[in-house]
Length: 170
Image (cartoon, rainbow, N blue to C red; front, side, top):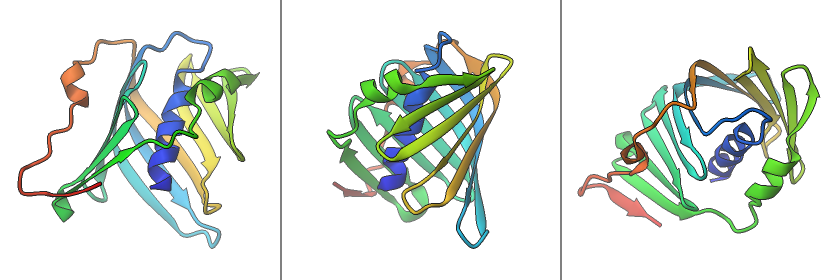
């Protein structure tokens, strides 16, 4: 569940940058490298809309959809035929995260949350990468491509549909 909180936290700094991002759609690669140098690569697509809607659709190595909306997280895992529904922890202070993203150089920002620091890099004014260390001291890099900023996103995209035969874990 820690990964989910971090994903939501990661999404929040996107909107803290001093550029007017109301929505974002992008493909992403998320590489996680442990202390032994072993890595795993995830791929997918992100849709995000201010103030509080996001969908992280992982397509590789497994299909997984993580919906974040109005303080709730729904994780749908087709391979397991299950959905996990959680309320975001109250201790996640999104406004504080947004307020803390500071420019550290040309097209480079830093956001701090709790004991973690997120390095955010832009390319030509568009979000490019986010680097941080997770709660297990793994190095995480999320690289975005095919970014579309401030384009309309159908609100229905953020509505999770859980098949009736899936197990639901709360």
